[in-house]
Image (cartoon, rainbow, N blue to C red; front, side):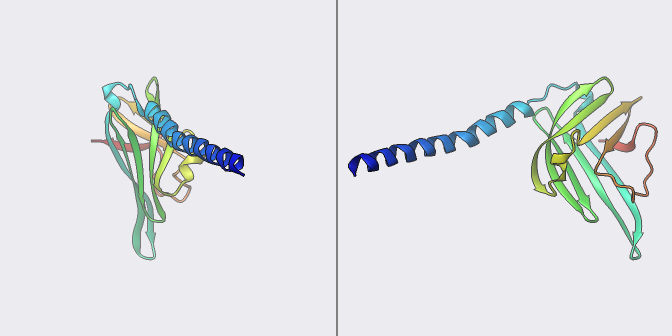
Length: 152
């Protein structure tokens, strides 16, 4: 009986240690993925509005804000039937910044199924965005490189 209790206690302690290490490992992995070495041209806040036109006599649409710092990248979608905040990773490819989903912070979790979640494109000082978040009902029209997004 005592042996069983001792073995059970030891197994419980091991399980407790393992469970406590998992979040730590995930945090370390996330921190490594967030360490971004990007040229300064990408650092900043990007904003745009996607319009659905009028629905029920009211303007409908949603705002997209992407904030890129040296430490992290977040994307926030907020508006008509949409709401999310995601943490992203980035990889530069010439004049494109490919933004992949890392973690959902709040709202819709659809971004996890979209890799890349966003692609930022720079052309002659103007910025454009491509994303699967934009559906066919959007009145805003795509240009040659995607939807225009303003860098602040």
